Image 1: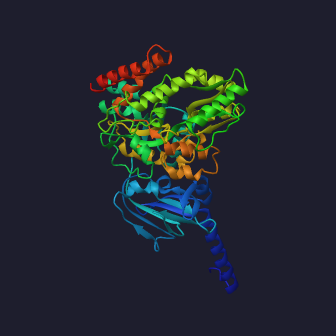
Image 2: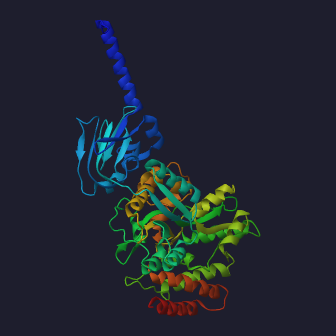
Image 3: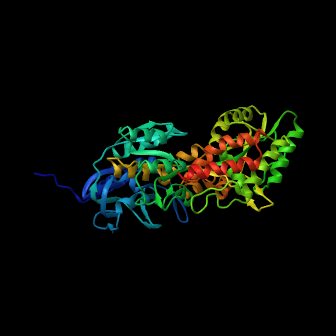
Length: 506
């Protein structure tokens, strides 16, 4: 005969089942379903390990993108979410699979519970997510990366691999533009995703190497970053992060500390004071042979816009003449010593230069060396009331035109430009993320936040037009002739204009 339980035993058993049920719900707080079948269960500990900061009014919450915990989808037509199947809420939207990377599971006010954050609205007590649609079957990619922080970037891509059980081959390719064009011409195997910078666009679009990415949602990224990768009215890459040009100064050699609103006169006075107080010190140094460092002075002396509406570039204008004359005047007064990057970095690191112009990419190096340095945004020109606009050098992620894995490529890019990676990878390298919200989250954690923010506000993206590429290569030779006294300013700019006009029209 089966055992007979008394009332007390039944009550005790019910309590045990309830406690066990509560324990299990805490251990496995969120179940993921695909078309009604269990796909994966996440414990509280697993979700906490994956979580990062998510803006959720009125503040921040720990959370994670649904694009990271749901299966990768080719297309999705419905999402059901709630404490269980019977009380689930349903979302049906066009292009639902594309939106999941911007929907979030966030920590609840109740410990151990999770809410769903969609378009700023919270749906509370989420224990079950059921996505309905077609799962992505592609499981491999090849990605070409470049510039600083490759090991950290590989770690982020490895995280994506683990989340979705895919295989991604990551190659460090120092010059992605030339390598991509060479492989394309040789009919070799192209990568699926490639990192590029904005001035690569004229060559890569002419070679038909990239896909047009207008179909991807990038509205959450900075407008300047998006502008940097638009050419001929189309978007060719999704901005990832950027560097900005800055003034770096040795705190031990500078007594007149730059203020947020400092001017060119303050800039000169600070350099002169450093030279007078310590003999043998170089007051200012930067690679003035490069047009990359002339552009901020052109804008500060009134050049606006830098590129004309028709894509042409004028350098024999009044603003450029005054800008180059100003730089040469600094040189003649022995305030500026022109030198190329390696020499400049070496002498600044050894305490022999008071101030240099460099990019935010130098911050980790100087920090690692233990230098007592600080940074300042470029100064204003009090005569023109214009800022010296630093160039914002964006790096972006593009999809090659001949990829066989376009959707998995897109999902990887959505992940890398998502707010989680954006508040981890660029920040560690003292770069600025393409997502402004990620940058705002890090306000209290980055000692250079104020200066970098001000610099980006007055900065302009590196131009994408062909005339800029011609300008860079042309002025590299001619600026040297001006700064060594072999040609006058007007001769250099007149000759440069002739070359730019000729080459840009080809």
